[in-house]
Image (cartoon, rainbow, N blue to C red; front, side):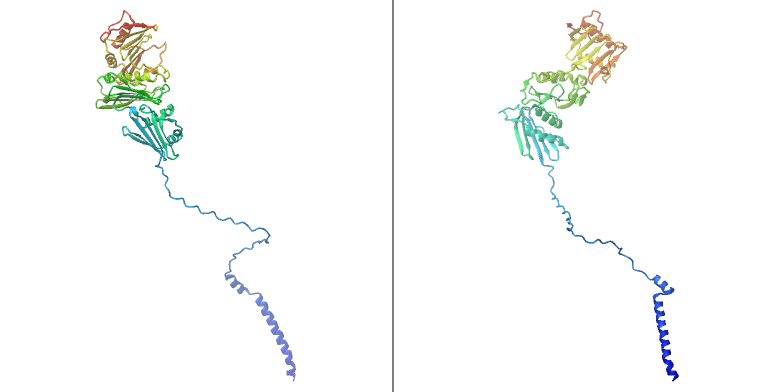
Length: 452
């Protein structure tokens, strides 16, 4: 019976212990031991990918405008630019001279010039400036109707395809006439009529416009200005071979291609000669200082006829450093001077400044110049014109035109040479001095005539 009464108390204590164990297990599960912490530390943790951000509250208002992306460019058609197409055409004619030249310019600023008479042609690139001038000037040209049968009139025709403009007729504007002639000449060279045996063209200078002269084989002489709307008819020359007779016995084959000396204001000249089967063309500047004695007679013949042509429109020119027609110029230290011209004329000046003139008849000018050139006293270089004389340093100066051009020399003390005695004798005979000395060349017959 006692055992049955104690059974409930044992159950109570058993229940209390069970409750305490459960409480202890819960406490242990809430706080892991050191081993569990070490194992947990080795396990990988997921990475943090999102950071906390502030998100504002939405506000009332219009929605933002969305800008559409730019449209893709339209492909450019592969159409080539017609650089080779003609942009300007010009034709320039003087039928009486056989002159027929033209030019053709392209969009690429290339200009082709053609001489229809000779077949010569030349192409120039980078002519944008000229093309601009042509496109501007040609439509402004006043082209009059060409008089019927006027083969000495300047005829011009032009076309500007891109502008739809064209014209043709008689050009009378002196500025345009000179400009067209100059450009075509620069490209193709000077023009002379067919069968020209001697021709000379001078470019424009401060004293005269561009002018030309030509002697044809039929004995006609043409002279014309580049500024003339109508050239003059030719004049007969009898005998027609007179200029070639003045070439002495030298052939143009031995001439140089250039006879040039720098001169202020001197134009560029082109001389063309046909002598038998030989054709020669050369450039000349400052002819008074550059020409040899062999070319001088022919040049003087041309210059004389050109002077009459340009005289009405020419301006006075300054005195030349050396006369164009001079062969010898002798200046003594005492101031006396003697000049021999190509036609044999002598000009003497005494110490008082009185001028005397005469003619060298017995001794040819070429003979005298040959003697002077062979004296070995003179040198090329034209030092004479770079030296000014002073009263304290008087000098004797001698200048001679020889086969190669001018030779000169200057001396404070004269060398021992008989040539100075020859020149002194010519001077003394010219001004009438009785004490004239013997000459080293055959004595000359001089008719002196004082010139005031």
